[in-house]
Image (tube, rainbow, N blue to C red; front, side, top):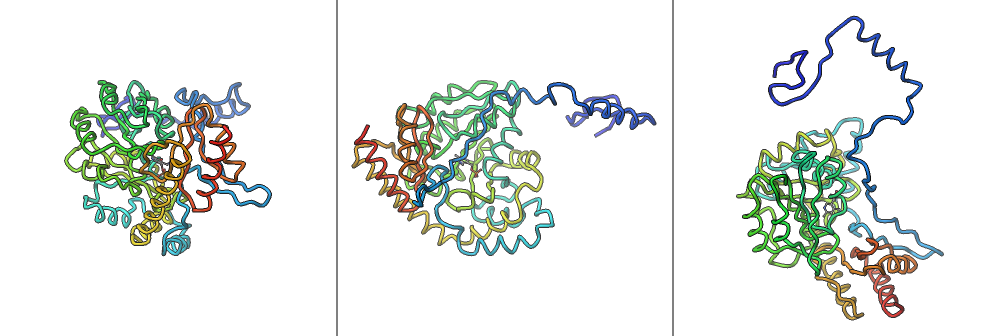
Length: 398
Ligand code: PMP
């Protein structure tokens, strides 16, 4: 890299502008700043990419009325507390809060690489898998580029695509809430840089099967990155659903996204990761917020990985609850689509807001997507029961 004072572009592609050194520079700069301190009308110019972006809507907190308990079934969180040994690991790390965390997440990376049987260089960690997803877009797409994904899907996708200046191409789900991979393939153009496949899909809980996904991956151009977002992978019981880690191995344009927020119950600590071939993983390390994953999060994630027996028990209990809730809904006359995640989806259309209000009145907070449907997390048994009672009443009354 050669630094020159009159070039905007470095030999290696970097861009900068260097102000020639002059005795007057400092004085001029501070004079200008002083001159502007009174403020020009309108304030600072913000990126036009932000226009119209809705703020990310978190699931509403549960607020009990009249002393009744309330259950938050709106954010796909794990109702169990952190796994054994995890709080202790986090508390121990808290003693060093005056220090920056390990930049490379060394211990966590080594643990993940061993667990998945992949090179450490193929792991990239981030502030939740949404942080990693944002880095992936930043690393691949900008103005004029397109990012393809199914819709409705994870509500952060349109936000992080728009922030990058790229264009979202939303491919409608099939009538039964599944990815339409043929339509997604047809939507790929020479402008496409990245495709998300959310498996299981949030919020419908539907899955993409191995054979159709392999056909899709074989047909996607090799220079388009396919991100398999597997935030809910641990809850899958359908044997036809592939583990993305097996699909990425011999495909350099496939990246798998996983998180500690759902099955592992660490949503509050913000840690997720990608498994991808080296150029992509390295790009993620370049675009990630430096020191974004706290030492608490790193140590808690390592402790969580080591508590696998307890993890599997909890996931099995939640899957059992899912089966019970779905069967009860069917018995009530609902027709929920098959879900492989820790939530169910009710396509209520225009009745969605009323349904959410009825649930709230019963002490259960669900996640409405007005005009479309409601997503309800599988939570603690009492909360699930309250939800089922509210759902039964709503069916009878409406
Ligand atoms: N992907 C999907 C499909 C999700 O539903 C979520 C969380 N709602 C995420 C990614 C992000 O989770 P986190 O940032 O907590 O890892």
